[in-house]
Structure formats: structure tokens, C-alpha cells
Image (tube, rainbow, N blue to C red; front, side, top):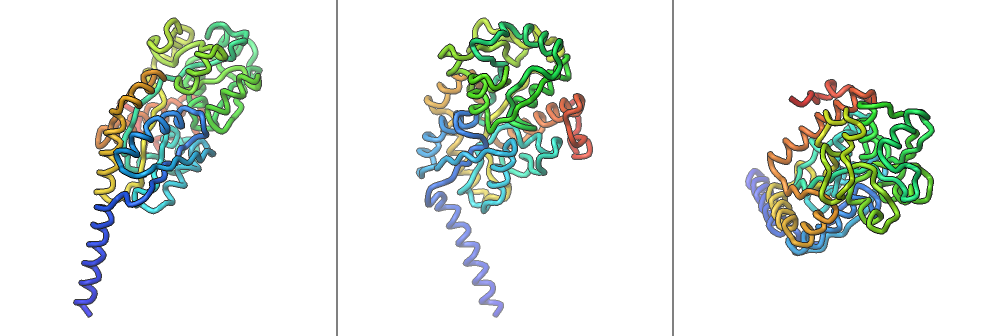
Length: 331
């Protein structure tokens, strides 16, 4: 009997090794946290072809929005830890615990690659009465709650930027949630909201088409992608203490995925992040390619969470004190 059990264990281990060696034996599923047309979707679809080529198998892209990214994060977390389902995610899960949205954050996942980070903008319809960020801030101060801001729900990029601004100036607005930056910006163009903070990559095409204007970049200095657009600190000097800050995009697998499978995913996305198609698109969208993995990625995620979670706590936007979650202030 002992010999039979030993043989069974050996066979199981051999099968596991064989499984990892054969990975991927079929198509892989990349779950995008937000809807089609948003910044995360744009980044995912830009890198996907090069990642497919590097992996040697198709990567099926599935948009699964909802719950400020909590739906897709839970979906990937519930999948087998075999590398066949991964997340094309943004920064949102790092805020879910402090916002009371979900317990899952990226500490429960393996960061295959932090692909890059973006610069956010404050966007308005091209026909908006707001010509400058100063105009917008003055109207918000004079009419608390009357100005409508497009959002993507608690923990989303627009809401987080709103919290940072609120921690720096008078900023009482009415937040209208949408299922992603793409739908929110479309609603803004239709006059449903007055302005929307968004990732620069989600807004760029509409800006180029003359449908949208950018009042400020959420940065401590202007960016080359939008020449002539001022930094938000010109109108809201108090924002300087939170900057530089911005959305990020990455690929995340389950933490207990086999090491050999992790290594293949890391290698594939490291190669894909260097592809000319991806780097050119990122530059055109105003994003910065990071191509970060390993301990560097873990430390980046931790630092970003500390800065942002405590910004939300200090402005009263956090539902749960970060300290009770073990999230200490960044030093």
C-alpha cells in the first residue's frame, strides 16, 4: 500500500511538472477590469498581440466591469491557479479594502508585470463654459454640489482624484458613476456631467478630434503629450503634496500559480512590453512604460497603496481606517 501511495504522489508531482512545462497548452483568458474604450482596456488590447506571440497561444480578452473593478478581481481570484486566467487590472483594488468595497487587493495576487502608469487629466466637453481649471474650481466653490462630475464609483480613478482635490481645496461636487472611463467620457460629451477626471489615454482621441478639452493634467508639471495644458497645481497648489501620482496598469495572476507558469507569464509580458507597437502607443497616450515585476513591482504597489489610502483617510473618503488594515503611512 505504501508503495502504491508513493507511486501516486510521484505521478502527481510528475504531472504537475509536465503541466507547467506544457503551459500554455491552449488559449488563455485576460480579464479586463473595465469596459471597452477605457484606459485599462486600451492598454490591455495594445499589449495583447505581442503577449500572444510571446506565449505562443491566443489570449482571449474579456471585459468584466462592475464594482469599481471588484467584480473582475473576484472572478480571477475564483479561477484555478493555473495561469489560464489572469487580470488586466488598474489601480482600483489597492483601494477596495479602505473603501469597504472588497477585501481583495493586489497583495493577494502575483504581479506579473506593472506595465506602465498614466497621467490623469481634468476633461470637459469642448463646448464647456469652463475654459480653465480656475474657472471650474471657482464655480464649484460658489455652488457647492451643483457641478456634476463623471465617476466610476468608489475607488475608481475619478473618485480618487476628487478625494485628492477635496483634500486640497473647496470641492463639493455631485458624483455620477458610470461603468468605466469610456462610458463616463461619452456621457460627458452628451452633457450628462460637467467634467470628468480621467486617464490621459482614455481622453486623448477625443481631444485630438476636438470634442473634448483638458483643463489641467494631474501632475506637478506639464506633460509633453499635451503641450500648453497647465499642471493642476497652478489652480490647486495644495495638490502638490500628493504628486506625482497617477493610474497604473498591470497584469496579475493568482498568488499560488505554479512558479514555472509565473515565469512564463513574466517572460512573455516582459517581451511584449518592449514591443514597438506597445511602446509607441503608450507614448502617444501620454503613458510611461514601467515594465516592472518581482520585488520592484511589490514595493511599487505597496507604496502607491500607502500614499493613496491615507490621502482618502485624511479627506474623509475612506470607509475603513488604513491603519486597521495594516496599511501604514508612507515614509
